[in-house]
Amino acid sequence: GREPQNENNLVLNLLHQHIMLSKRTNVHYDLVFILDASSSVGKEDFEKVRQWVSNLVETFEIGPDKTRVGVVRYSDHPTTEFDLGKYKTREEIKEAARKIKYYGGNTNTGDALRYINTYSFSKEAGGRLSNRTVKKVAILLTDGRSQDYVLDPASAAHQAGIRIFAVGVGEALKEELDEIASEPKSAHVFHVSDYNAIDKIRGKLRRRLCESKDVFPQGLPDEYAFVTTFKFRKASRKEDWYIWQIIDKYGIPQVQAVEYNAIGLTKDAVRVVFRNARVSDLFDRNWHKIALSIQSKTVSLYIDCRLVQVLPIEDRENIDIQGKTVIGKRLYDSVPIDVKVVRICLLRQKFGQDMGSSMPPYLHENLHQNFNRHIQGLISSALLEHAEIFVRY
Image (cartoon, rainbow, N blue to C red; front, side):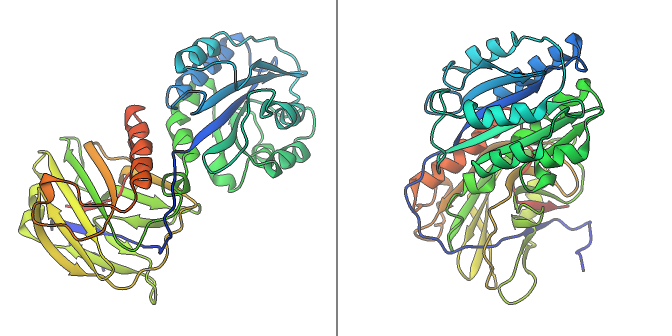
């Protein structure tokens, strides 16, 4: 059963994976927006579409060697507004997005999907070969039933390695959005009531685009450390929540800290709960550093550079990294906290008592930096919402 809610507990969830580490760089995207510009949208709502594209672009690292962005609008026929290779900076793309033309007409979504598959990601349009560091992504926004068939061109795009998100507004049919979107449908289909609501899904869409396998492309090794500096805000409610979490593509938590529940190797779950007088210090609304040293048989907790407790942990199963990684998530929704630092370090040795003076040694600089780049991207774009160290009041 669960511990009483009036205890200050640090409960940590963890799974592990044995890996061979190899050189790894950050993941970027060839990103193409496919925008419904048919008569059903209207000039006023299309202005909201322009702003939505501009706002979403703000959350990416833009550049010739980073994320490239293109826009295709469609009605009777698809038309390239600008290719992937045209603009080199975020500000250039945002300015171009605010000038996307609107003409009206019919809604031939299938034709647009066929067009982006044959042209928009091509070398001629500024596309790159899809590999471990560059992913092809299309985000389609529509508000009505297509007047041509979408299943076959969507399937061809999926087979070509294009990951498609389908965003429906108002009367858009869910069945048709499902035909367009990549698998799993639950992660790639969005629906809102009207164009006033599309900006509300911007953060969720951006987080789903960034998969855990992009942050941890080789998984996590047998031994590593999690370090974060954070504080509660006055608005933080006394409920269960997570500082760091990895969720698989079906929504099942894989790694969580403070409830340290993990999928067990020989049982459904293994669990470590830290109960110590010093754990209470975390709830005083001041800045604190938490560090967890994950060893093959033990988990060590450090608070504010001091070792608090070392507890045994049973054998753990592999982590499924096909889902997402999130920061600052309460059990059921977001939690207001301030976070200064989030680090994953791959250990050569255990923490020493001088943990605060330097980070513990890690085995792989590239993976460490790759994680930090993704986390910084989430924080700088105001998408900080999930990361796992689960804290129970």
